Length: 92
Image (cartoon, rainbow, N blue to C red; front, side, top):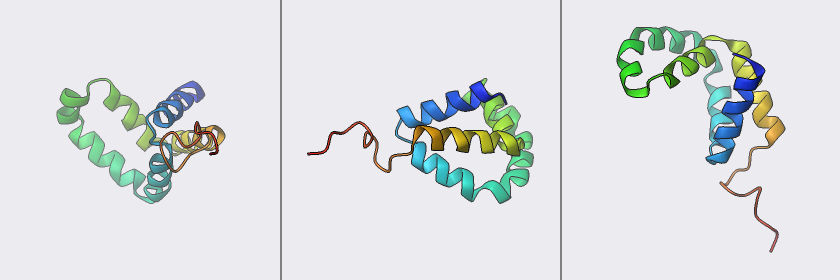
């Protein structure tokens, strides 16, 4: 997974207000990544019908530990507000 793809994933997660949960899940599931990659490979024919081409990107993210690290770095670079829209709100 390229650096641009990692940045794109991180920006999309932040835009949807999912940066903090994604960061938490990436850290929590790091030890399970090899198992999740095997399960993903086994279920990919079924999941590709529902998720289409997005499933390939998710598989690459799970299989490649460095890709997970790059997404985490990008999430940290963008900042991870705990509440959606928290970074956009003005102090009141």
